Image 1: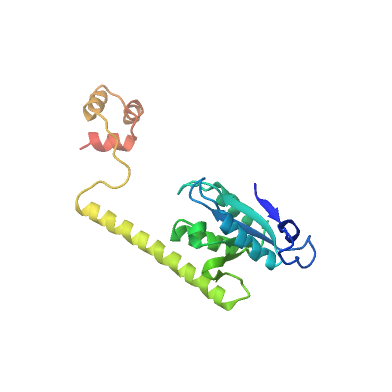
Image 2: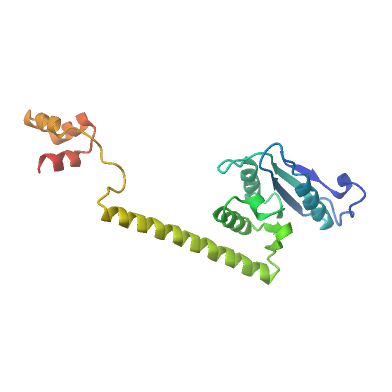
Amino acid sequence: MPCYYTACSLGPRLSPLRGDYVSRMVAAVYVRVSSEEQNHAMQTSELRDYAVRMGWTVKEYAEKESSVKKRPVLNQLMADARLKMFGVVLVWKLDRFARSLKQLLENVASLDSFGIRFICLTQGIDTDKRNPASRLMLQIFGAFAEFERSLIVERVRSGMAEAKRQGKHLGRPSPIWRRDYAAALRAQGFSFRSIARTIGVPESSIRRALQK
């Protein structure tokens, strides 16, 4: 479950928070380590300190252990972002937030569409909409995403063309069934529909096979 921190709970070494506690911006701090043996204290400490210096309340999302496909804490963060439960996401490095360029671009674009600011503390990335440079960066991110999609489409098309050239079947594999059995049923007076139902293949396949 995410944890909340304020300047008071972090001790007297931090600057006091400004403004009303109720209306203060909430910052989602996302940290991830590769295994349970590793410690995310350094990531958390610096991100938390930065948020408090900015006058934000901290909501922590700590991914203790994850795989390429299973990152439940990140999924929860994105779900909370859709509900606008915070106004900014803080991460230590980009590779902590996403395992691939595609995932990074999709997540940052989603956060932007929700009106959520994204900050990568150690790599100088900030998508603050008040900053023209950040808007340019988001457009560059979008261009990279479109370029990557184009490359994927082109690779798929090239692969399909090469498979066709080699005479390979594309799409779903053709069902295997006994044509002689279907012919025998037809000779006994069964309709194409009945034969198709009996064998378990489309009627059109029975017709094509027996009318050749």
